[in-house]
Amino acid sequence: MLTYLLKRIGAGIILLVLVSTVTFALIYGSTGNVARNILGESASAADIAAKEHELGLDRSLPVQFADWAVHAVQGDLGNSWTRNQRVAPSLASRFPVTLSIVAISVVIMFFVAAVLGITAAVRRGIADQIIQVISVVGFAMPNFWLGLLLVLLFAVRLQWLPPTGYVSFATSPASWVASLVLPVGALVFSGIASASQQVRGAVIDALNKDYVRTLRARGVSPRSILYRHALRNALPATLTVLSVQFIALLGGAAIIEQVFAIPGLGSLTVDAALQGDVPVLMGVVVTLIITVVIMNILIDILNAWANPKVRLQ
Figure: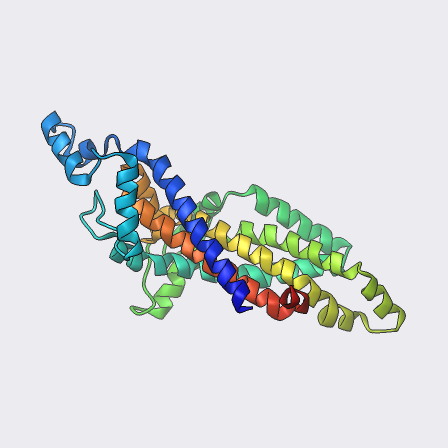
């Protein structure tokens, strides 16, 4: 297991290097107007040239990337070009906000999708059809549009929940929960639709295995077959879906944070992309890649715990 984990960590490092390189090259073309955006439209050509020299934009792309990479390896992600802040502390203050939204969404999505998927797989009649309809609606409904509907209903009309904003858990646990209900609800709905279909397929596949037919022939109860055998064999596929949905929710959080004015990593990324703030964008990329790699390693460990075949491999 240790060798396997070291290989996964090594693959994660390679992924981090490749994605960072490609991302830096892609956003390099968006830095042309950064100096003018900072100084304003009335800035002279000399002022713009001086600002570009200060930011290091007058250097070649390989030199800029090498300088960034050397400092990033040491934990220094540089200064924001537009916010006059250090990138690392800014990410450290915003990442827990996004992680709390995504983590809660994943937990809720996992349990709800498991219940719906198992029900659809076992009860192949009207219950399955209703769940299929819910899944189609979930696929078709954009989460930002659902977020606006939730705000209109629960915040504007009923006034049960705050429409926007975020309150930290340390400030007020009750207000923290209230500030997350609508964003999490908007973010998790489409994920439940997708994950429930994957769980349904995994459970149906497990129930169609030869060993299940053997257990039925021996008179083992359907409940025992489902909960003691089929679900355990369907768990690896379910955990893989969980990992994929976690990555998808990280991306969806950027839009949801904009809709609900939440000061998380997503809103910071959108602002940095609009302003061409390369240090912030690169810091976000590094943070997200490390998070995804850690998540995938945890899923692999859970798979190995649940499935002896994975441990042997």
